[in-house]
Length: 467
Image (cartoon, rainbow, N blue to C red; front, side, top):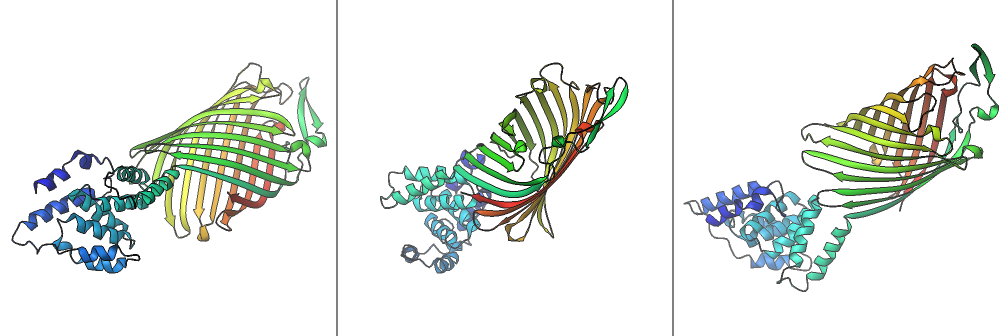
C-alpha cells in the first residue's frame, strides 16, 4: 500500500514529465490503490496463478495473441498486483490492436515495476502508435542504455530508434505541370482608351494594341522542396519554390523564385510562429521586383471550441529593380479564425481573416505618395469522397492614395483601387504520389483612374507529383 501511494505521488507522475504522459495515467493510480485496498480486505481474490504457459505462448514464432489475450483477461481480478501479468496483458492488447487498453495495462506494469524491460519496450511502441513520437524516442533511448539489455534485442531496438529519429526530419519534393488559358497574359488595363487632362481639358487617348490585354494558352511549371524538422516543443519549416509560366507572348513570361522559413512553437494554451521569406519575380525575361518579408502569427488555444482565433502581422520591403521610386515598405496587421466542422458533404474548414494595410514609399516623389487600406480574405476547404479536396479563396483589397496620382489623370485626383479575386481548386489523387489539379481564377480590379482598371480569367488543368 505504501509503495503504491509513493508511485502515484511521485513528482514525475504528478507533473506528467518523462514518458508517463498518457491521459489515463492518473486513473491508473486510482485503480491500483483501490486494488491494493481490496486485496487486503475480506474480498481478496485467490493469488495470481503461474503465468509460465502464457509467457511460453507469447514467445512462440507466431503467437496467437487473440487467444493469449482472452486467457489473460479473465485473470485480471486475481493479478492486480502483478507487474508481469500487466506487461503480458499489455503486449497482447498491443498486438491485437487494442491501443488504449494496452497503454493502460503497460502503465500499470511500470507503476508496479518501473524497470520491467518487456513493459518498457512495448510501452515505447504504444506511445509511438498513439502519436507521442518524442516520448517514445526518450523511452527507447533509455532502454538502449540498460546494462541488462539482451544482445539479441539491441539491433532491433537500435533500428527502431533510427527509424523514429528519421521522422523528426522530413524532406519532400514536388513538381507541378499545368496547361491553361489566360484572358490577360500581360496584365494590361481593360479599357482600350484612357482620358488625359491637358490644360484643364479632357483628351481621349487610344491605347497601343501592345498595351491591351492579350489572351492565349500557356504552360505553368513549378518545382518545390520542403524541409521540416521536429523537436519536442517546436518545429522548423523551410520551403524553396521555383515557378515559371511561358506562352506565345514572350514579353509576358513569368519566372518566380520563393523561399520561406517558419519557426513554429505549439502549446496547450497558446501557439505562435515567426515567418521570414523572400520572393524574386522576373517578367518578360527581366527582373521586376524582390520582396523580403518578416511576420508572425499568434494563436490562443480554445480546446472546447470548433473555431480557433489568431492574430497576424507582417512587414514587407518591396524593391522594384527598374523603378526605384516605387520601392516601399508595406505593413499588415489583422485577425481571423480557423473553423473546422463536419457536414453531410464532408469535413470542412473555414478561415476568415481581415487586415489593415499600410504602404509607405522609401523615397519621396512616388506618384500618389503613401497608401492605406484594408483586406478581407476567406479560405474554404471541403474534403470529398476518395480523398479529393475542393478549396477556394476569396479576397478583397481596397487601397487609397494619400496624394493626387498625376495631374494628367482626372486632374490630379487621389487614386483608389478595389481588387477582388476568387480561386477555386480541385485536387484528386490519381495514385500514392500523383494528384490531378484543376484551377479556376477570376480577378477584377476597379479604380477611379481608367489606367488601373483590369480583369483576368484563367483556367488550368494538370498534375502534381511528389517525390
